[in-house]
Length: 220
Ligand code: C5P
Image (cartoon, rainbow, N blue to C red; front, side, top):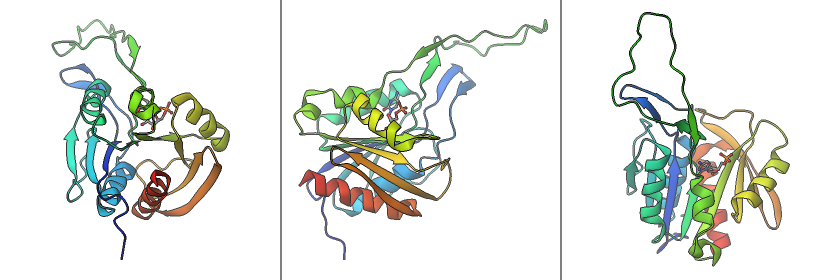
């Protein structure tokens, strides 16, 4: 028996990578599988929440009962998040959002001209979706509980604490690495105002259920 600890709550989750177009056939992305975010969506739904899952390009099946919004770029993801954030009680940013996007997207496929010349790509920084939501009035007042993730290769606790402060979120979840991209197991470090607590190594669905229970407890 699992109590429906999130009944009546709306949970908004981002998951997967983003895809930043260079031209109609090319782009830049990353190796995020989306598995952790999708597992959290499933766990939140199991806990009785209404769940909106804003997903970058991944081939994973939609968890039962979850409303999925597919997006490509970071800007698309930001728009989709902003469209749902006002109705949400919890925002969990599990997506691996691209830090930069090509400054311009070519309208047509960039062609080789035969001279051996290579295109020069210029980049601009993407908006920080989580920091933006965390700075909103509803998040600042506590009406919207924001959770961020961090993937670090070293000094996870120090980086997670710094990231928690920088993003302005009450709870920052560190992936206990080195690199869990695409894998089915992980361990998590939960960093909040009280300190740090480890969720020991387990499959991502078990971790997602434990994380959702922790969040439900913090909501009171
Ligand atoms: O700064 P960094 O990318 O390490 O932060 C990771 C956290 O911030 C994750 O929760 C991620 O989903 C979120 N993020 C975001 N928008 C960005 C970059 C990161 O929401 N542009």
